[in-house]
Image (tube, rainbow, N blue to C red; front, side):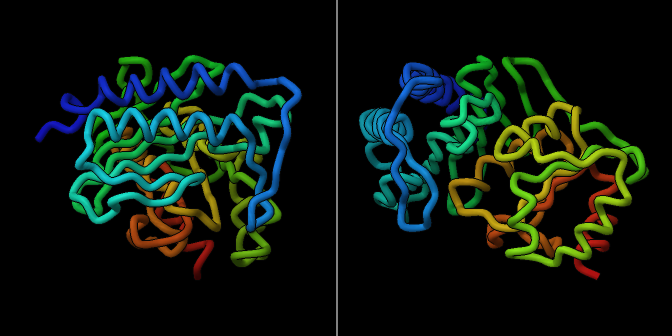
Length: 254
């Protein structure tokens, strides 16, 4: 099955409908609540996931759904949609642009399609492990061969010390040209479109990571967990251009 051809039009609908809701709340005074893990959630997160879930259940009633805000439905189906309505809620509530909607389609537990949609920027990035398209145009990772030339990103520097080895991460910082916290899905977007070279998250949930795998693979990058293993089974991400990924993993785990 050509998953891109089969499901991209529906992914566009999911992105458009959720965007319309999110943009209506962006840079507005809205209540921010804390979830059990102390992460923030807003009405925009909930309403945008609700509309996507309803569209999926209407169009593909036999498909499963896993969403950050409303949990699992029929999650043992062959096809399962994984949704993060606002990846980067902290950016969203602060009026920053570095947030997006993550949409992934799993087939038999493997991510076959991934979407990063930036509602405010009107940018729709989709990958199927073979190709990656930004608003219909092919994009590729930048293929550098030296860490000293690389732009490295992470979402939250404080999470490195909390979940991984901070000294090894500092060694990697000192090996690259530029290090910034342009994170959440925006960092992976920058990697896939050739504007960054390394994106690292020391802790991830399934709704954070599944969409990224077909996108980075489709753009010609390498994506693994923190130890260089299968990202589908892991709870962390190292994504990079092909010639430097092995070196990044080596420095972080040696």
